[in-house]
Length: 147
Image 1 (cartoon, one colour):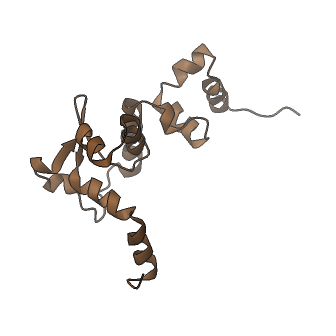
Image 2 (tube, one colour):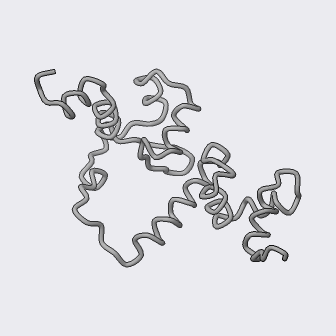
């Protein structure tokens, strides 16, 4: 008995082949990228910032189409111009490389805003990430102030 394969599975199989010319074209489509990510065939590191941004918008539209966010404090709406810093300043303050900063953006650790080709970050977001990943903070949060 032969295995029944859907056209979607065939397309994903073609897209997964890095040597296939058609696969290269298919991997540029956000819906294909999303499926390849779900199946673990590619990771966010395989995508450019622009491709990740398109995927995030698509996922957001699917998830929240017509819905209002529930109890979310949107700091960016209340932020002053002085609250924003560019990527260079983030890299200097955190002593990280451009690639590390891209990874933090790609995996959703650091939120950002893009204006043209320039990326900006809220100081509060950077401080929150540092605070939430501070080891002693996590120990105290989990086990109480006695530690």
